[in-house]
Image (cartoon, rainbow, N blue to C red):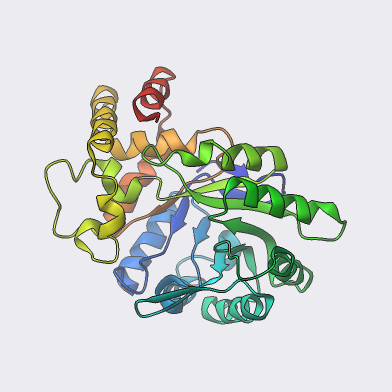
Length: 315
């Protein structure tokens, strides 16, 4: 798999990342192992998790596989902190007093002394930005994180955070931002992507297949084993099932038919090759689904296809 630099840093990552949000919950240890094997065999290196995924279960499963399935030095481990989940409850805490102990707990679960990329999972008005960012500085200077980034920040929040970190020598410069971005969610193009490009942040799109909607599997109903059938994801998936979204999905399917490939490959190739994007984060329920997504590495879209998809998805 081709490698790309993460923003204006020396960190090289695979141009597709492996998402592990469902690991330890909908994806058990055996299925996670098969996914990691498939990802490593395809040359993938970037693996993304978070302390808030399954209240740490995702990190535990991943940590149990690192060193067994793949060597620690062969992967780029990325995790996040700032969202606290307990059962159905969810709260935000980006204070330094919460972030740093959370990072320590992540390291224990992952079975490593450092992560390659540590990200603030979400913006929070409850903590001054300079306090949140000081935790990133401490993580880097203490050796617990090699690089740091942000996640789910708006355009102005991205610009403010990145500028603050560049304002004084010695602060940990932001390497990346992780945002929801796909053919069905193009809002980051308005402000987040321009801010990231101007300030040297790599962009890691999450949900590049819009929760699986862009694969075309919801065209005739809701499969029983799909995310839309899972109460935890149903609301988000349903937001993509309106008339406008259906038109975009049909365009993706037609493009795939014409190129003799899958809608998954078309939708992933579109977002992977957008200006400023470093690596879409691909999450899959099964190893078979992941292998189907990894096939995109072998293809690139003819120039007229992205242009046509831009037109149909604009709005």
